[in-house]
Length: 64
Image (spheres, helix red, strand yellow):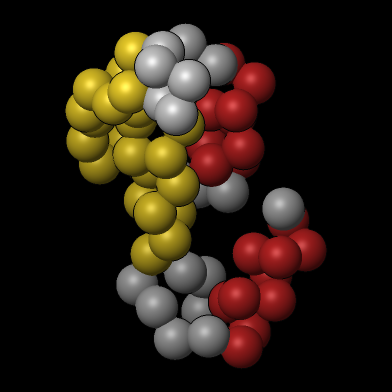
């Protein structure tokens, strides 16, 4: 993920990347946090399998 983020910062114009994760998945939450992301909101969703999820949406800023 670090290489993809570095490529995006060098080649794309954006303010932030939206990065949704399941609130209970601590390992997945560490990825956007390591990239400087901040929680921008949360919402309840239902997965394709019917499982109820509470997702956090991180906004990962572009590094100039």
